[in-house]
Amino acid sequence: MNPSLSELQEQATQAIAGADDLNALDQVRVSYLGKKGAIKALLKQTGALAPEERRPFGQAVNALRDAVTTELEARKATLQAQAEAARLEAGWLDVTLPADTPRVGKEHPITGLLREVTDHFHGLGFTVASGPEIEDAFHNFDALNIPANHPARDVWDTFYTEEGGIPRTHTSSVQIRTLEKATLPLRIIAPGKCFRNETIDATHLAAFNQCEGLFIDKNVTVGHLKATLEGLVERLMGYKVPTRFRPAFYPFVEPGLDLDIECIFCKGSGCSICKHSGWIEVIPCGMVHPNVLRACGHDPEEWNGFAFGMGFDRMVMLRYGIDDLRRLYDGNLELVRGL
Ligand SMILES: [Zn+2]
Image (cartoon, rainbow, N blue to C red; front, side):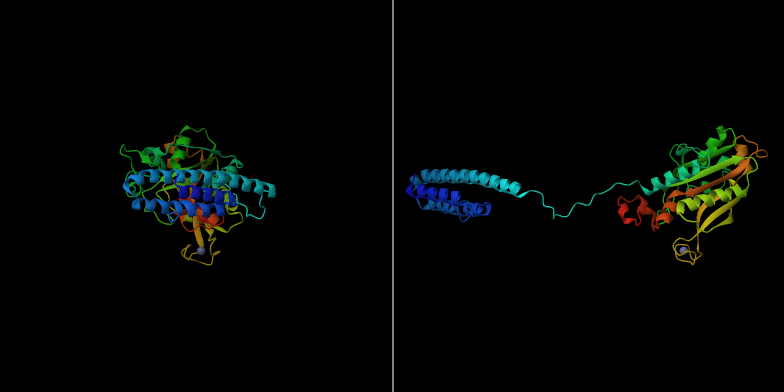
């Protein structure tokens, strides 16, 4: 080997052995193998040599570079092992590090509310009924006293599948399916998805959740309806919230009513959410129309009852003070305060 090369290798070996931590070793590496290092400088000299000397010189420098690289790697492994041993010796657990905050999964607020509503009605002797999400016109409209010329059946309000099926516009269709087969008396709730051809905004969605209830017995009065729904609202809102019933028209009930609760945002003094009325409509309801009982094969002279339907998403919104329904279907529910 060229004497100056063997000298350089000797120096490198000593420098590597003398590096007593990883930083020092890295400096040694840079000084020999770096862009401005000694070995690079040697390679630059190649051009000044006689042509026949270039090849053997180049090979010698490459061999030197490989030898230095091998030594560096060996020393690095040794130093790393020493550092690891020292760290374990000193105790590896750093109790001053901040802990990770555990991320706890929770049920979706709509699922939570559904569980609570179901539990509440189980206590009153109701069972849960379900039915298909794609309905026919009889179960979604006709049996509910909504005739073919009713504006609700317009395509602007209702989706239709290419085969003529109707993604149900309310879970009232489940009441009809249950009533058709039922032996009376009957107490059911029917929670589920519904679909309407709505323009989506903060208070309207094209797919939403509803929960309907149906109570059929003998000599049922508006008093039964009122007590049942006031109890439900108190359970869901967690306090005895002031309520009022207003007359309303729905084809499948007579009389039809709307249950309002005092605005939870302004406590009745009036705000933009309650349109300055101090009240928020939460549960449309009423006494089941005799035509509905008749359409399902029951005698309205013998049986009567009440029905109600609540928008589940709306109830969740009120309960948690959420100002935009779309948030409930957003991936990041942490944005919803109170959850
Ligand atoms: Zn208000």
